[in-house]
Image (cartoon, rainbow, N blue to C red; front, side, top):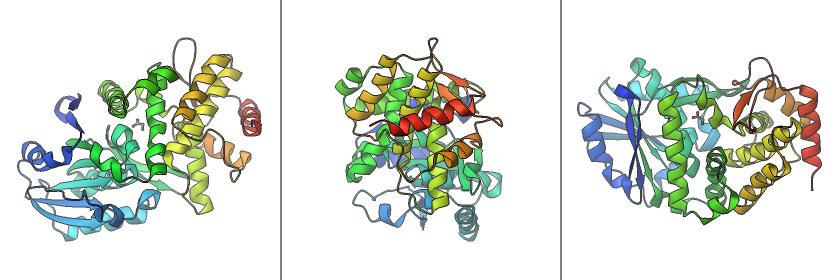
Length: 349
Ligand code: GLY
């Protein structure tokens, strides 16, 4: 199946289904007909997996970068761009990012910057990558001050989401990716039972279709795209704290899951959501066995500080929250209320 991201001349298809990686060479032929060389950017772990049988139809080099958030540093970015230059990639050539969200973010940013921008194609290998990160052209790396603070919008020429590849994911990583699926189900107004009755393929299609539709209408997050950050204010704060604490054992999707549960409680405290609405969040997260409590290692004061520096904030505390008229970006949420709700949330059994 192909799902279109409709951005005029920068538009592209997301190829989703079982075995879609076999279409890579024909997609490249169609979308990058002048390319002679490709550099595949991936991690050693992914390269060793049985499905790593990718054929680009071009002269191809493979460049390895670290797994996970460790890939998303300014140092790795500069190293990667230097490598593209050493391999002599021209303006007509191509970067093929093969990995989860961290690798597509890094490789996308390298492609956005090298020679002021060359083509990139994403082969997304994680659930969160397939339903979210690889689509929409957000690329970048982290700074000490926060997640994704150095980056660019750079749309890929195509996204390949091969569902077979997900079979090799460790169960925890697979589950974590469902955090983004739950986010999309909530944004689409689904109930817990409706999500539970959907096949995994249908859940992925729902999430990709939502992402493609939202990005098509608001490429650079001037309005509705910001809603895709539902759950991300607290998620990014926990991820930033993890980076500062020197570990990255919280998966992005797990952080999003916890952020969704908290956003529901904050919306309730602001009179925007009732108990039943909070319950829908909890039930959905429980049905896919995702965590919904802040791990003890994070300090409330550190999380508050990090949330006020989230790049979506405007010198204040900003959250995407459910409300009677649907979801909206709520700015200037009172810091004392957020702290009290966070403390209360942490104390829930
Ligand atoms: N991950 C949210 C977005 O791409 O806008």
